Image: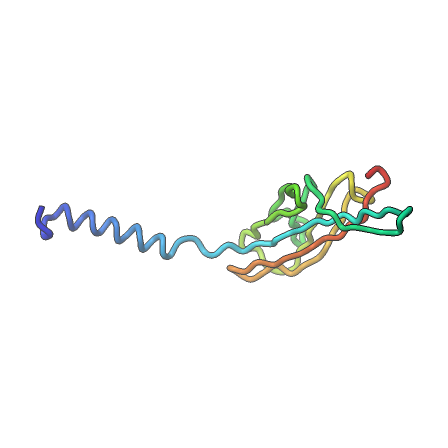
Length: 129
């Protein structure tokens, strides 16, 4: 094939278009990096440790009470929630039978587009844990 051949021009145009789209791509992800830590205390030894809380149900909730994102914490008590472009104030709500009272909340301001905000929620263990 010659470079001036119509099929070569079409292929080049398609490749260029695909590269241009991938360069523009989706907007950068905006996320909240959450870590749930459970205070575990040994009263006999008068010591405490903060352990990652696995399998906690975690929700990102806006001021109107609508859930923006949700998921479960991993074995280390961590998860990442995408904000879906929501802005303003919100709450992170962690629910687990291992948390005193069954749930713990923390307020935060959602990050700007393309940014990540980190939050660590410290919770006391329930009597059953």
